[in-house]
Image (cartoon, rainbow, N blue to C red; front, side):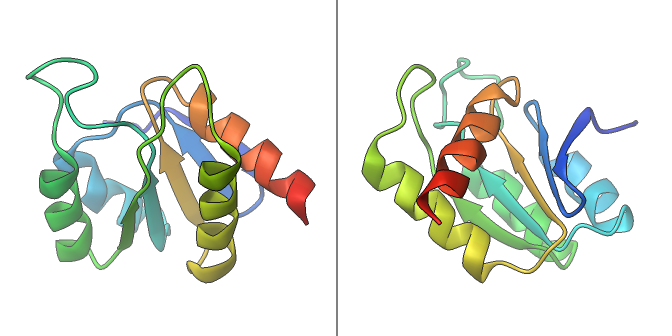
Length: 114
């Protein structure tokens, strides 16, 4: 399987929904951190939970953070929290949501804070 990545910078990428099974692949690609921006069950009961993805990420040696945000609106507090994760987590970093758009918007808005 190949991850559907979109590079925002040389060391920050975003992706559509990832699964526990893709965490080992992300680690093999050199990623050191993963941020999950998709709320659990947003896509229904078949969507993998943050807990299951976190367990797989940690087993693969990745740092993992769960920052669920709504698709249509990201609050100033959520943008600030994302900026803090960008500052603290080791890179390369991979953020994901349903399509990658929400994570991209969070990244762009977090960049404007600095």
